Length: 215
Ligand code: SAH
Image (cartoon, rainbow, N blue to C red; front, side, top):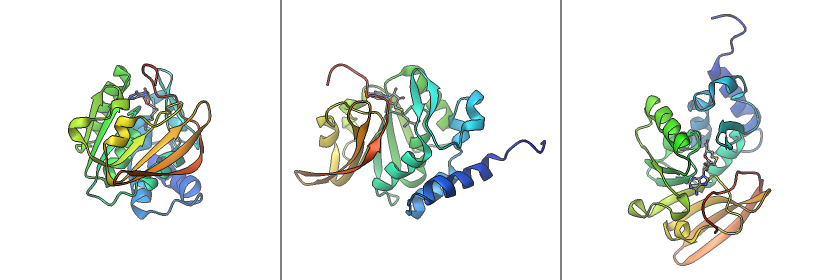
């Protein structure tokens, strides 16, 4: 190894301190997951030098792997303790699914674009994430057979509203985190209490749009 090759693990630990701890993420399980998952493995090879930068990165097909801080924030908002069943909409690179899988018992993740799904499934298998179940499909419909979910993370933005099927598939007491809006979106946290859905605005974000036929 030459001296100018940077160790991904030390870059990752620095990423967590500077971008995630410094911005107020406190949940020890989230910090530990962010320190563990090899983010560079989920980034296209020609962009590996940038894997730990404070930004999203292109993964092909017009899609992106989310910024590290946003992955940590959404994971913290899901309030995972270890036994949960989680649904992710928008597998993308598979990175967010891996972070969730470090904490939760099971992660179901749905991707709309087939080559992305294949690549993410291959990465997750190579890294031995056996508790992640990836599937090709329209995540706006959720995954009825596996519902209810203790947490649902939507990592692409619906323009107007959170799809009703996703709300329906949230367990009582469950948390749903989703960006909602056009070019700039509001990251929203929804908590289900029986038939009531309490919604809280978290922060402005920029995700790619949720694809599919008109909402
Ligand atoms: N969570 C990803 C980042 C996702 S980018 C990661 O960690 O890398 C958003 C992803 O949502 C893209 O891959 C896009 O193809 C996918 N997507 C868009 N609309 C979708 C839909 N209706 N159902 C499932 N996936 C969708």
